[in-house]
Every structure is written in structure tokens, then in C-alpha cells.
Length: 227
Image 1 (cartoon, helix red, strand yellow):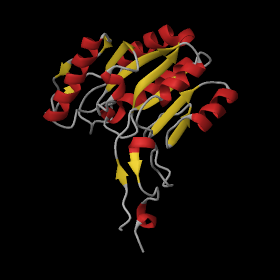
Image 2 (cartoon, helix red, strand yellow):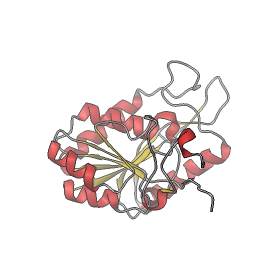
Image 3 (cartoon, helix red, strand yellow):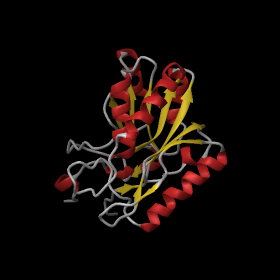
């Protein structure tokens, strides 16, 4: 049998606890969910936020998202480029509609935008009042669509984080070494980031997910070739 590696998707997350640095948490969430137009296997589309910081976090996300520049990805000033093609744009719009039909509230984004360079431009989307049973919280969208899920405390946040058939990438924003260490040990994901985005880093070390997110060895590059 030949060795093989399979990357099989994810429903990545970032937990934001009450004691998190709000500005840092927002930057991590924006980077994780929207940079590269959310079209990264490690992008976080579930933002699990505890009660004490939830409303502040949502307000700060809305403010930060108003400052995101959506334009030609080759421009230095651009934060979010176009969706890759018409099919993916239709999928993104479909899930926005699905989320709203399930009871989610669209609090930012979702507009189709026109720019000088041709492309499929979509204003990044933030959905609130999402629960972990909704399709937008279960299925991979692969676009700039993030759902905020409220948790009463760290224990519930961890439970929600692990309540998924996938396990590729996860993150936590907290100032507590206790919670950061516990999350590192107990998050059911191949990568765990602390006060950093879930996506956009490549350390050229073994990489892969857990559960339904990947199959096979974790080595990359030449080291992954059978000898």
C-alpha cells in the first residue's frame, strides 16, 4: 500500500475568554476568519466567545470590519481579496441565507462589491446568535463568513470547540496560563494557537488534523515522499 496524505476539511474555531485582551482577540479573529478571503484550510469560521466579553467583542469586530479594505489582492492596501470564483461566491451567499433562515443575525457584511479590477468581491460577514447545531456552525463554507457562538464559561467553550466531526486548527485568546495550557492539552485539533491567528503560519513541521480533517502521515515536503 502506498503512503498517502489526505486533507479532508475543517470547521476551525477561535475561543475568546472574558480575560482576553480585546484588541488582540479581534485582530486574531479578523485574521483567522477573513484574511485570504477565508479561503484557507485553517481559517476559523467559528468564534466561540464567553458571556462576559461577548457583546464587547461583537461591537469591536463590527468596528474593525468597517476598516477592512476589500479590493484587488495585488494592491498593498488590500486586506481581503475577491472570492476565488462564481461557484464559491454562490456557496458563500447560500450559507449566509441558510444562517439567517436558521435564526442567525447578520450584523456585518454580506454586500456584493464592485471594484476596478474584475473579481467576485464580497464584504466579510459576521453572524451572531449562532448555536453549534446550525449548519453554518457545522459545515465548511470556505469563504469570509464567521459565526459568533456564545458560551457561558471556559468549560462550555471547550465543549463547543470539540463538538465537531473535524479537528484541523483551533485557537484561544486568554491571559490565563491555566486556561491556555488546558486548552492546548484538550482541544481536539491538530494545531492549537494561543493569542495568535489559527491560519497564516507555516513552520515547515509535521502538519495535519484530527478526526475527520486528515488522514495519513504528518510530514511535509521531501520528508513525506516514500523511500
